[in-house]
Length: 242
View 1 (cartoon, one colour):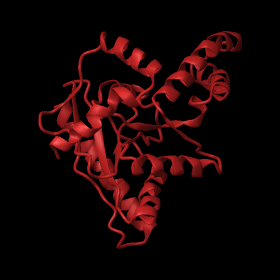
View 2 (spheres, rainbow, N blue to C red):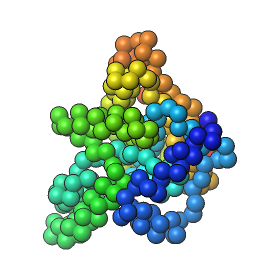
View 3 (tube, rainbow, N blue to C red):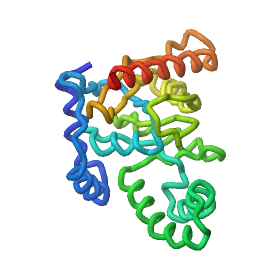
View 4 (cartoon, rainbow, N blue to C red):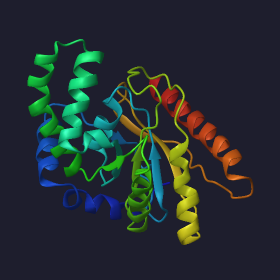
């Protein structure tokens, strides 16, 4: 899976992330142990690539965004990209219902937190995900455009995103429509790669690539591809947890 061409992604890292995120990244990396790919396993860049990982109650995307040696476009819930939506989400759900805070305290904390989160998600050039809206077309349009620019995508499709354990539960399958749309536009298949940053070994590992063949009805093959990705993710997590 390794190649000298992988440096194409690596060289773009500093220049494609926004300044705010790069400053935060620089500071946080000073206080964390390094996460690195095993030697010779950095993915190549000649294929349009979607990385699929485990959310781990936010630990997954934080580890990967801080330590991946190349630029990625991450799918992030739309309410985390817009400051007003983020504030509303924090006040009416995260801080009150999930964490049990009094509403006044939640409002006080949510104001600065929502600004910081929105600045951060925009600085990493996140792709907003509109789960229950017709705007989901915008999510896929931005994703296809990014793949066309040779920008890899990072998606964390856990249904139970608050699950902080290494156990992988059920995953949303809707994101796999990326392949159908990209193939329709370009005639090329998307490479889906499971990826995991291990807290135990501080290594980043990718699974075997998974592709659509186009030989079956999309809905049937979507389920099969989702299962293969799920199994690959479980496999690499088990390897790194031994």
